[in-house]
Image 1 (cartoon, rainbow, N blue to C red):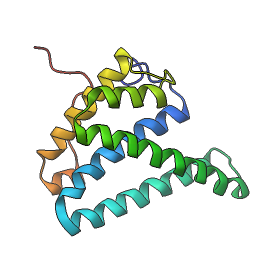
Image 2 (image 1 turned 90 degrees about the vertical axis):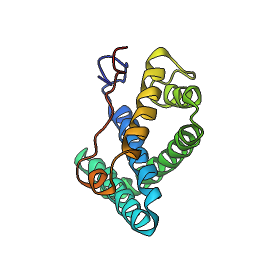
Image 3 (image 1 turned 180 degrees about the horizontal axis):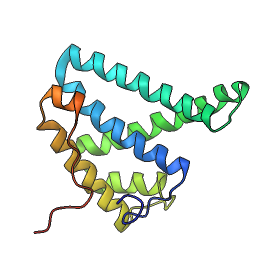
Image 4 (image 1 turned 135 degrees about the horizontal axis):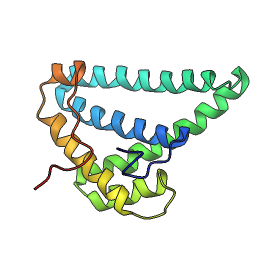
Length: 150
């Protein structure tokens, strides 16, 4: 649905954006669990970064260039997570849609598609909040990408 109905381009950079958004949603949920959640969030973040490194290598990026590309990805990741988290925590769907539009669609502004993504992210945050810690760890239930029919 992200690609077919929300206009996410099927490119590696757009996949990175979706991956980052979903990791952030889980990190936000884990932070509510005190030290146990903080430790798990750190493990998730470390796995996320390792997966990015592995993907670069699978794409044929040489050892010498991986460090430089990882630095750029790290800067992008922190920028995205900061912008997305601020909007999500504030419950500001329009700000999130604008950030998603800028980063995923390179639109510079919110679009109808990124508003759908922002609403999905907010529903997912609420869904993850309602799930027990163990469920989030083993099989988180993500919100539907499209809202339920009224």
